[in-house]
Length: 107
Image (tube, rainbow, N blue to C red; front, side):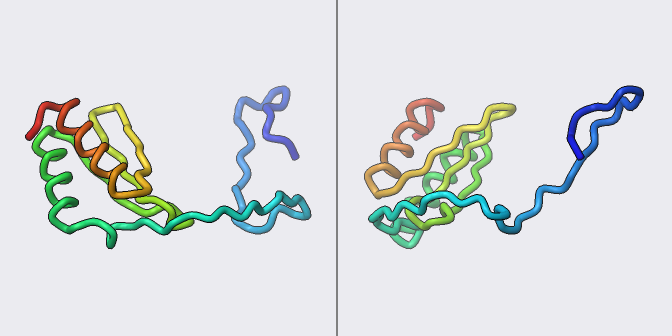
């Protein structure tokens, strides 16, 4: 069964995207030594200041952690534009905060 259009049928055939195994396909697992970095590594006041400054500028902020726990995930929504960053240390978080203040003119 293909996902292509068939002659006389204008509808695309949709198939579910199963979350199961890859049916025998394998990929190499590469072990990486990585420090775990999450919101517990940041001061709650730093996170609060970041969110406050972003929302003051009229932005929406989505915060999360990467699936491997190696970085925090920050998504900034500015109208139709989406900015994503994955700071993996306190220094990267501070750089993102500085960029936000500079780019959007907030203190």
